[in-house]
Every structure is written in structure tokens, then in C-alpha cells.
Length: 416
Image (cartoon, rainbow, N blue to C red; front, side, top):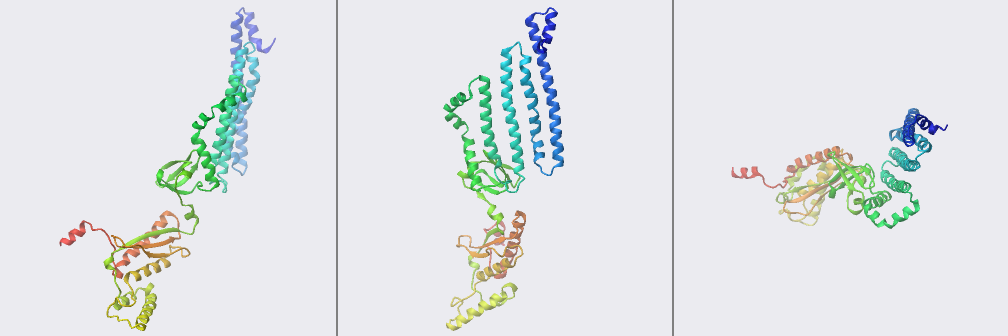
């Protein structure tokens, strides 16, 4: 007596119809097979997952922890019951060859999908592991893994479809090749993203963690993820902006990495000085400004040179316009430069400059160009504000005025 006909023979002996006995025998064996497969899957999964969990708890590397996190052991455990099912299918459907072939093809197709799940788990583990390595954590690993998985899924699904339909894989691929134009159209963004990811990586244009500004997409923050099709940027207001990967090579954006790798962060801001407040300094005004400690030595030396020049050239100084003279804006510019050079928040090894820009309808801009030693945003803003607090408050000491458009209070004051 064969085991696959154990129930069938019993039912026949009770007088049941042959066809009915075959179907009941098949359903009973199928139920037993499903039960065996679930039991084996449960036991193997428990053993493998427990094994990997214990190993991960004892090792120093976090690779095995990531394997467990990405469910690689759980997916690997499904292989054993699947192969058991493939071996027992001929016994279950011994009297139904059509169903046997159909179920076997289905299980073979599922085997391919299971292999793809295992590969995906392993690749996700590698991705997470590479992100923990200092040399690779800022590289677009996600893009390469996604490209590989796309090809793997396409080949896997085509293979599964070829198994189910009974068409030879080579012939199936050849038929698909004829429709390559449609495939390229469907995967246009994916192909563009793949090419862009390679160019971004090779040219080192963007890394994970870089601060970028992309005005076209409203992005201003840190790059958190570089995928095959998108780049995610967490803005400083904690919102997330998604940018197409190929936009990084087709459009212009600003990467602040150079500033972060340098010795300081640039400060570039100007004060608008009223033109009618600028004048030559008289001797009394120069003497008064000499009380400012930081520029007293400069004024002594500069005034001495000017007096010597005017004397040697017999300049008539009854009119200040004649000869060489100090101006209040020139002395003020020197004062700002000296103040910045001695400020504790500026980088003394990088450029420090106070310059005049072209005069305009709102006065003459006096621009401060320097670098803060602390590049952190909050501290940078504090240093720049501290400098301009002092500079703005110092303007009246040089008999200068800051230009500002009239406000309501200006008109009210004029009426009094």
C-alpha cells in the first residue's frame, strides 16, 4: 500500500465512488502538506532567528544586528519548507497531473520571489552597514542598491512569468527586447536617476549630510538621503523637500560644504551712510577722535604724515579742501577694520576688509567682509549681530549718519 493512496484505498473499501475518493485523498494530503510546511517553517525560523540574535549579542560588529533588523534570517528560513513542499507535491497530486504541474510552477515562481526577498534583505543590510563606515556614509549607496534591485526584480519577474507560461527564458527575453523602446520610456526617470547618481558620486557633487540650497525646489537644509530617483533634504524648519536626482546635474544649486570645511563662515553686510554727513575732519575733530583708543596711534601717525606733506608743498590750509586731509568716513572705515581684527569671534587668518561700494540713491554702502571663526548658524548670527551692534552704535561718534527711509514718526517730528 502506497502512502499517497492510504486514504484513497480506505475510502474505496467503504464503497465510495472512485472519483470522489481521489479528490478527498488529494485534499487530505494537501492539508497535511500545508501543516507540515507551516510547522517546519515555524521551527526553522525560530532556530535561525534565535541563532542570529544570540550571535549578534556576542559580537562587536553590528553587521549581524543589521541582518536581524532587515529580517534576512527570517527570509532564509522560508527556503527549507519551500523545498519540502516541492518534494512532496508529486505525492499530494499523484492522481492529478495537471494540478501537480500548475502548483509546481507556482512554487518555482515563488522560489524566485523568495530569492529576491533574501537578496533585498542582504542588500539593505549592506546599505545600513556601509552608512556606519566613515568613508562610505556620505555616498549614495541607496542609488546603486536600487539599480541592482530593479534589474534583479525585472529578471526575476520575467523568469517567473516564463516558468508559468512555459516559454523558454531566452525566447521570452528576445520578445521583450522588441519592446525595449516602451521599456525605456517607462523607466526614463529611473535611467536618468541612475546616470545622475553615478555623476553625483564620481564628481563628488553632493554627499549625505551636506548643506545645500536649491532655490528652484525651495530646498535649504541638510541632505538626508540620496536615492535612485530622489534626493531628500531636511530644511532648517524641519520640513522635507524632495528633489529629482537628475536635477542635481541639470540645474544649478549651492553646496555649502566648502564653507563648512574652511576655517570660517563669511560675513558680508553693508551700512548705508548718508552722503551729506561725510566731510573733511578739522584739527579739533581729529584731536577728539584720538581719544578712541583703537585708532589713536593710527591718527597720530596719519596726521603727522599729512601735516608733513602739506608743509613741504606749501599747501594753504585755510581751506580744508586744499592738500591732503582725513575724512570722517575714512577714519570710521579704519576703526571698523581695527575693531573686527581684534574681535574674538572673527578668523584672523582669513580675509578682513571694510570697503566702499558705489554710491546710490540710499547713500554710500560701507561693506564689512570678514569670516566668523565659529561656523555654527546660531553662533555665526550672534557674532555678526554683535559686530554690527557695535558698529551701528559707533556711527554718531564720527559725525556720520545712517541712511534710512522716512517713517511716520519722521513726518510727525517735522511738524513739531
